[in-house]
Image (cartoon, rainbow, N blue to C red; front, side, top):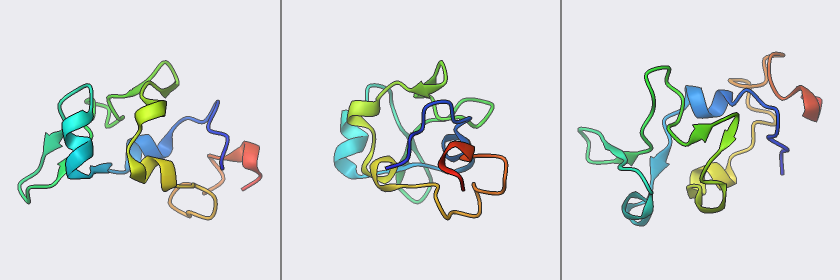
Length: 89
């Protein structure tokens, strides 16, 4: 797994984070439902996930499956030399 501590959270800013139907009912804050009926985590005006607070994920223990499975390693949308320096990517 990737050590996300100290990361500027580009994945939390650049990507919409889809939720499973169960996750959409369990999140502490209301998700955003888009026109296609899919639920996503809400984002702030600066496009950061509402749960990214004080430099880290405030719902780490109950974060969505897509967040649990995602790794920035090898993802060229993220590893353009600006991020994931700690991992040597």
